Length: 96
Image (cartoon, rainbow, N blue to C red; front, side):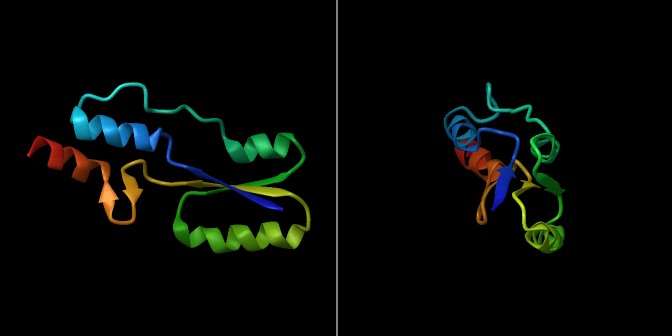
């Protein structure tokens, strides 16, 4: 089993609504997360962190080859909400 943790470091949906209704005035949406890969290792799993998309395949293949539970933390830009929408776009639309 390979666990994937997609980590953008924020409560994205709540932040989106804050930016839409109160552009630039956000509160309580930034998260201070643990290092999930290190946390996984402390529980006996294999853990890896991916910061660049091109590194994912290698990390996944390494985890798959181990044949034991593993976790991959995928850190993504908090600005990205969806492939077509960013927090800045939401904020700019709300200001306009």
